[in-house]
Image (cartoon, rainbow, N blue to C red; front, side, top):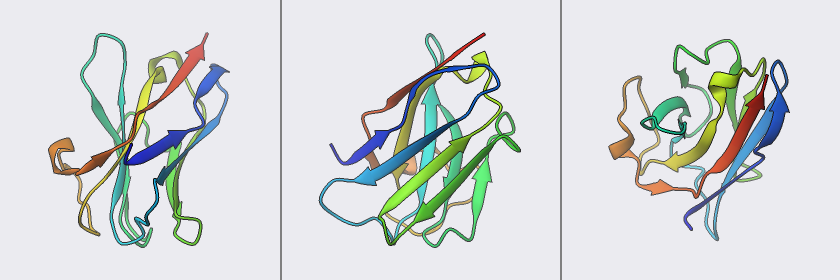
Length: 125
Protein backbone atom coordinates (compact mmCIF):
# COMPACT_ATOMS: atom_id res chain seq x y z
CA UNK A 1 0.00 0.00 0.00
CA UNK A 2 1.58 3.25 -1.13
CA UNK A 3 -0.53 5.55 1.01
CA UNK A 4 -2.41 4.93 4.22
CA UNK A 5 -5.70 6.78 4.71
CA UNK A 6 -7.35 6.76 8.11
CA UNK A 7 -9.92 8.59 10.21
CA UNK A 8 -13.14 7.47 8.60
CA UNK A 9 -16.15 6.35 10.58
CA UNK A 10 -19.80 6.88 11.32
CA UNK A 11 -20.96 10.41 12.10
CA UNK A 12 -24.30 12.14 12.32
CA UNK A 13 -25.29 14.79 9.83
CA UNK A 14 -23.83 18.11 10.86
CA UNK A 15 -20.86 16.48 12.49
CA UNK A 16 -17.16 16.53 11.70
CA UNK A 17 -14.36 14.11 10.92
CA UNK A 18 -10.70 14.51 10.13
CA UNK A 19 -9.03 12.16 7.69
CA UNK A 20 -5.30 11.58 7.58
CA UNK A 21 -3.06 10.34 4.79
CA UNK A 22 0.55 9.24 5.11
CA UNK A 23 2.90 7.30 2.86
CA UNK A 24 4.39 3.96 3.78
CA UNK A 25 8.12 4.06 4.49
CA UNK A 26 8.94 7.24 2.56
CA UNK A 27 8.24 10.92 2.48
CA UNK A 28 5.85 12.77 0.18
CA UNK A 29 6.71 16.29 1.25
CA UNK A 30 7.75 17.27 -2.30
CA UNK A 31 4.56 16.12 -3.97
CA UNK A 32 1.01 17.34 -4.32
CA UNK A 33 -1.67 15.26 -2.68
CA UNK A 34 -5.36 14.99 -3.38
CA UNK A 35 -8.45 13.48 -1.82
CA UNK A 36 -11.08 11.72 -3.89
CA UNK A 37 -14.23 9.90 -2.91
CA UNK A 38 -16.51 7.26 -4.34
CA UNK A 39 -20.06 6.81 -3.17
CA UNK A 40 -21.95 3.53 -3.72
CA UNK A 41 -23.04 3.26 -7.32
CA UNK A 42 -21.27 6.45 -8.33
CA UNK A 43 -18.04 7.32 -10.04
CA UNK A 44 -15.01 8.50 -8.16
CA UNK A 45 -14.92 12.27 -7.78
CA UNK A 46 -12.38 14.86 -6.81
CA UNK A 47 -12.70 16.40 -3.36
CA UNK A 48 -9.63 18.50 -2.62
CA UNK A 49 -5.95 18.88 -3.42
CA UNK A 50 -2.92 20.61 -1.96
CA UNK A 51 0.47 21.47 -3.40
CA UNK A 52 3.75 20.37 -1.87
CA UNK A 53 4.12 23.29 0.51
CA UNK A 54 0.49 23.72 1.46
CA UNK A 55 0.37 27.22 -0.03
CA UNK A 56 -2.17 26.26 -2.71
CA UNK A 57 -5.38 24.30 -2.25
CA UNK A 58 -8.31 23.41 -4.50
CA UNK A 59 -11.77 22.10 -3.70
CA UNK A 60 -14.77 20.63 -5.41
CA UNK A 61 -17.71 23.01 -5.31
CA UNK A 62 -19.71 20.51 -3.29
CA UNK A 63 -17.29 20.69 -0.34
CA UNK A 64 -15.97 24.21 -0.56
CA UNK A 65 -16.42 26.11 2.71
CA UNK A 66 -17.06 22.84 4.58
CA UNK A 67 -13.86 20.85 4.03
CA UNK A 68 -10.27 21.95 4.52
CA UNK A 69 -7.18 20.18 3.23
CA UNK A 70 -3.87 20.80 4.96
CA UNK A 71 -0.50 19.16 5.41
CA UNK A 72 2.23 18.92 8.00
CA UNK A 73 5.38 17.96 6.17
CA UNK A 74 7.25 17.58 9.44
CA UNK A 75 4.79 14.80 10.30
CA UNK A 76 4.65 13.57 6.70
CA UNK A 77 0.85 13.72 6.78
CA UNK A 78 -1.95 15.33 4.80
CA UNK A 79 -5.29 15.99 6.46
CA UNK A 80 -8.84 16.52 5.31
CA UNK A 81 -10.96 18.28 7.90
CA UNK A 82 -14.62 17.69 7.10
CA UNK A 83 -17.25 19.85 8.79
CA UNK A 84 -21.01 20.16 8.41
CA UNK A 85 -21.18 16.67 6.97
CA UNK A 86 -24.34 15.56 5.23
CA UNK A 87 -25.57 12.21 3.97
CA UNK A 88 -24.35 13.04 0.45
CA UNK A 89 -20.79 12.99 1.80
CA UNK A 90 -21.07 9.27 2.53
CA UNK A 91 -18.36 7.54 0.49
CA UNK A 92 -15.03 5.80 0.57
CA UNK A 93 -12.39 8.52 0.67
CA UNK A 94 -9.05 7.97 -1.04
CA UNK A 95 -5.89 9.98 -0.84
CA UNK A 96 -3.60 10.10 -3.83
CA UNK A 97 -0.17 11.52 -4.55
CA UNK A 98 1.22 13.10 -7.66
CA UNK A 99 4.85 12.86 -8.74
CA UNK A 100 4.88 16.64 -8.95
CA UNK A 101 4.72 19.37 -6.37
CA UNK A 102 2.00 21.37 -8.00
CA UNK A 103 -1.64 20.80 -8.74
CA UNK A 104 -4.18 22.97 -10.55
CA UNK A 105 -7.97 22.89 -10.70
CA UNK A 106 -9.17 20.18 -13.01
CA UNK A 107 -6.13 17.95 -12.56
CA UNK A 108 -7.48 14.50 -13.43
CA UNK A 109 -7.29 11.49 -11.16
CA UNK A 110 -5.20 9.75 -13.81
CA UNK A 111 -2.35 12.15 -13.09
CA UNK A 112 -1.98 10.85 -9.55
CA UNK A 113 0.65 8.13 -9.31
CA UNK A 114 0.01 6.59 -5.91
CA UNK A 115 -3.23 5.76 -4.14
CA UNK A 116 -4.28 4.68 -0.69
CA UNK A 117 -6.69 1.90 0.17
CA UNK A 118 -9.51 4.25 1.16
CA UNK A 119 -11.34 4.96 4.39
CA UNK A 120 -15.10 4.77 4.72
CA UNK A 121 -17.08 7.79 5.86
CA UNK A 122 -20.72 7.19 6.67
CA UNK A 123 -22.98 10.10 7.53
CA UNK A 124 -26.32 9.25 9.11
CA UNK A 125 -29.38 11.49 9.00
